[in-house]
Image (cartoon, rainbow, N blue to C red; front, side, top):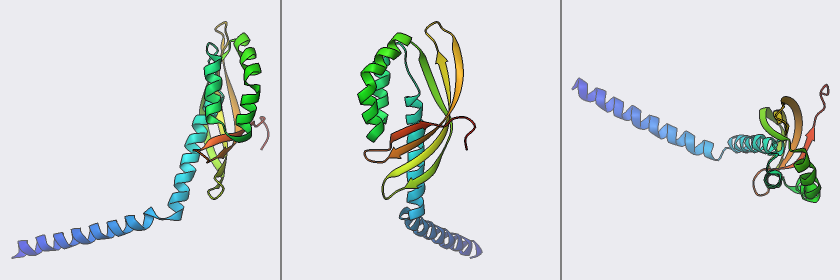
Length: 165
């Protein structure tokens, strides 16, 4: 008899726990704070990837790198890249320098989910390899604006000079 009560109590407690968990999950699915956090994370991930792309150049295939740049840009930045693309390609092909960028840290400093805009700051490590094979590493800081439109894309990218706050 005692064993039966133990199993019944365990079953009732398990059912209550499942019911409470389901109710909690249903409440949080529509939670505005959770949706905001999801948008912030998505914008931050896109910024990290896109900033790295815009600081990476394959000196042997400049045109492919420039195409990658235009795919991650939107608005005024995309317009500028299209306008200056041919001139930039010629200069970069002559130089032959390759770069590979890694975003070492980034943070969303502003997010407006209604207008679909975000502002991000990031630090980037850029490994530069000249045509001669000489390599150096450069560290940069950027402020970027993103538009949600058809997925988060960069609408501006501005270098922040060292020593500024």
